[in-house]
Length: 129
Picture 1 (cartoon, rainbow, N blue to C red):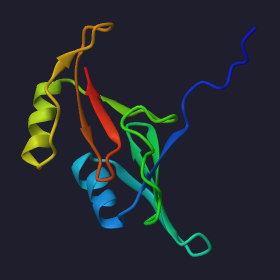
Picture 2 (cartoon, rainbow, N blue to C red):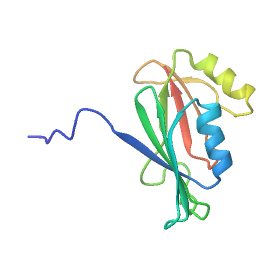
Picture 3 (cartoon, rainbow, N blue to C red):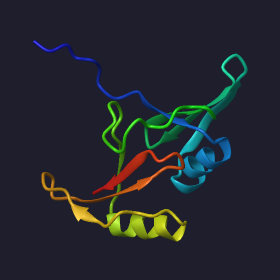
C-alpha cells in the first residue's frame, strides 16, 4: 500500500547564480509575486520566496553554484512546466522579451502543444497547454 505524501506540492526550489538576472526573469518576465526576500548572512545568499497561482517557488541565489553536470539529462530536476492557455501566444510574448523558445511541438501523450525555453542559468522551462 502506498504512503500518501500529502495533497499538493508545497514548493519547488531553484538555484540561480545572478540576483538581478534571476529576480528579473522570474518576477518581471514570468510574473511571479515576491512573498518574501531575505539576505542570509550566514550562507551569503539570497532566498526569494515567490508565488504564482498557488504554486510556490523558492529562488536561492548562490553566485558560486556549480553548473549542471550534463545537459539536459542530469539527475535531479529535469525541468519546470507551466500550464498556459495558448503556447503560441505565450511563446510570442516570451520571444518579444528576448527569450528564445524552441519550436512548438505536440506532446505525443497528452496531445497538448508545448515548447521549452531557459532561465538565466540555463534551467529548462516548459510551457504546456
